[in-house]
Image 1 (cartoon, rainbow, N blue to C red):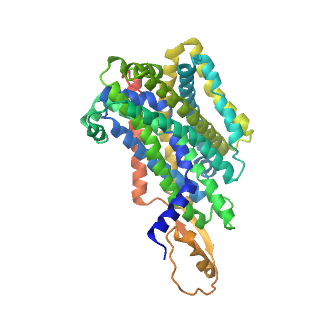
Image 2 (cartoon, one colour):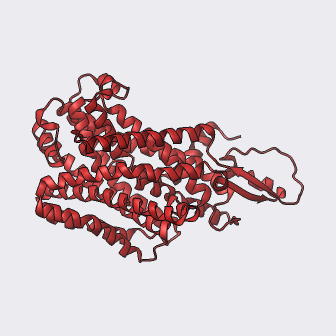
Image 3 (cartoon, one colour):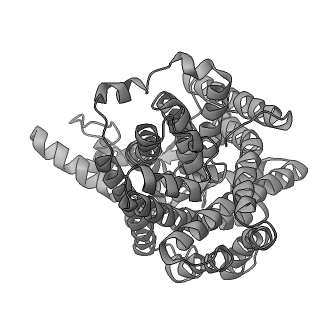
Length: 486
């Protein structure tokens, strides 16, 4: 009989094999597009809008968990499921929305990286924008989607994780530099408050939500789970009933650990970084008259003035690291989208380069004609675009995971092999040994249903309705001339 400590060690060792996809998904929730929104929230309401950060993370966890389920059970990511199961006109419409989301997201990464380069190395914005194409070249050497080797996948995950770790380290340093006499006051910010019902509080909260739950992360999350499922089937020589769909053993072995890794990564990374930005802003900029309409360069200048020059530099480094990691992941999501929706056969390097160039060209035009003001406007515009697209992207995800014909796994089990299934791997997904002698019987078909339960479906629909209503309320208010901070 295994000791409890042995079970814990075995569970941790298995969990370590799954670390990676959740970190890469978390990158999408901590890009430079989030910075100005969270800083505005802290500058205007101190810590009161931390509840909006928490709520955004809950929505992200719900949607990303559905992504993991969809990719694990069907063996196809969200884009591939759209191509396979939706009418062609709807599939192409969603593809256009997805590409717009990729470009809008990439705009934020380009802007954030270019501003960081100007602060740190005194590189003019125009040259900084052009230099952002380098992260695409890095992907060409690191990421090989055509390879099924987990060694290649793990290498890419580690590569991105380094930037994530550096971003988190920067904000840990920032938190140590500020002075918060009443720590309980910060924690109370994670609870609902009356400030959330004020007009400006609503706008800022919705801005945090719109800048946090990114459309491209849904395609990414549903795709990143697939390599480990494939590795499991190959390693255990399992024959798939459908060449695309993983075996039941692979799904059951991987699913709960994929959920755990996602939730831990989003909580410890995305929620931490976005909360840290808001806390630093609340502790130093709250009540300052020039913090209300701050762009990223202004935020750097205020941190330098109100905390220390070192604090401003740390913020710039965090923006550079997050911009690079988010840009790399965004380019990767662009490839997943094009290959999934339309099976675009263009070489991967050409696809990645084209995505980044589409984002760079408008940034170059704006910096040459409008300068710093134009850069701030294009960043705000990218967040508006993402807010409008998210409801269209998330709807198919909830639909696919709620329909039985997509989420049922049909397997043929030879009951003479039941004893072999009761291995340590089988025990990981709830099977137990009975000690009986199993005699050979004819194979029989088994249906395992992973369709959303009523509770999960309800949470998914409520999440979609909240995101849709919040985002369109934000957009309509903006179009009507309200002073909104994205």
